Amino acid sequence: MLARAVSCGLDGVMGFLVNVEAFLSHGLPGLDIVGLPSAAVKESKDRVRAALKVCGYPWPPQRVTINLSPADVKKEGSGFDLAIALAVLAAEDPKRLSGIESTLLLGELTLEGRLMPVRGALGMVISAAEQGMSGVILPRQNAREVECIGGISIYPAETLREVYDHLSGQATLEQQPVVSYNALLNKRHDRNNLRHVRGQAIARKALEVAAAGGHNLLMVGVPGSGKTMLARCLPGILPPLTYREALETTLIHSAAGEMREDAELLTQRPFRAPHHNISMPAMIGGGTKARPGEVSLAHNGVLFLDELPEFPRQTLEALRQPLEDGFVNVMRVNAQFQYQSRCMLVAGMNPCPCGNHGSQMKECRCSAFEIKRYLSKISGPLLDRMDMQVEMDAISVGEIESSETPEDSEAVQARVLRARKLQEERYQDEEYFCNAQLSQEGVERHCIIESDAKALLMQAVERFHISMRAYGRMHKVARTLADLAEHERISVQDIAQAIQFRNVDSRYWR
Image 1 (cartoon, rainbow, N blue to C red):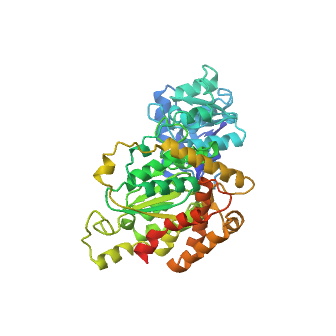
Image 2: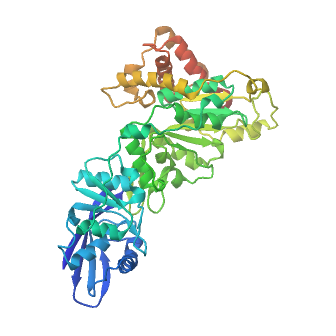
Image 3: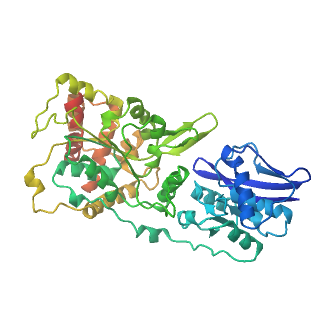
């Protein structure tokens, strides 16, 4: 007897449908799985057999062959267990389980027949809906992850018996209602707020400009000056994720196995802060299964590198291409995937090993050689990719104890949203979303500078020996400053501020 069920594999962040065919034949009892199964899929034979017996379903006293089609694609993970178990039961009596061929079945089975969550559920459900599947049955722990997906009926389940009773008509699983994305947005809560940041007016302004234009930011300052606190406040002043951005972000986190149980669609922009001992595959993506790295997990959000010179040089240099292109290609022997990586890079570092070089409040104890060696860990090409650079000193006790309440994140975000609205209208017929994404052609078309402002910019280029990449990025920063000030053209004031946000480069590295 022959029966077919449908499951799904994971290809990068999206799924691909897998036909699970079960065939019962004469011969010694046993179970064979063919179709390029991984070790986890091969081990499903023991999980499925035990789960069926514990749930009261007899194992067929025949030879069972399971084929996973397409047979030339590697099948990874344990999410095929449920489909294999039901295909075996359907093979004994094909009329027993109606609708099994039009329903996507996802879930790992425990030995007692409970369903465990799978990695990449969101991408699999989206692929099933696009392929015309009528419904999907998946573990209840994955249900909230896909609750915004329409066009397909979603049935969360907890046990193998519940799924069998539903498909056989003995009982009915409750269909999960579709939840609007706006309803999820209303649940957002930002724990880090700029009202807790005292002093650092220039750094606060730089953070606002970076958020308004999507620019990369480097903060150089003494220990305890507030670099990490400011960086953690950045997601709270960025525009809320759109539905498309939320799907893109959640797809990557789901494929990487970063979603906790019962997690909803991500509505908060990601903030990733890897430790400085991170390896290059962990940062860029890779490993034996070519998983997304930190630069992809920060897609549509912020990648914060604290203690920048302490990161391995090779890891930092590998970031250059993903930051420019907005995606990263991960290639391994048996896998090649492309992951999106359009994020804001925010970095914090001390100006010297002791951290006090350039401070007006603390004395530096490092030699000139030690300072030079420390700063040389950051390459010129990486510095060029930092649109903005700001220097921070320790704040005084008077600023800490001041009764004046600093401006909160909500007020700053309102200005950021106004600037982003101007950019959205300006680029509505183009591929850009913010000023930082402008190509050279876009800079020439949209960054129109007044004559006296252009003269000032040329003076700065000659005086500070600014590279052409940094020159273009200064145009983009000036365009953002003009948007915040609601200037149609880039003025002298905008250019002067953009130059000010490049002074760290000339002071420390030149």
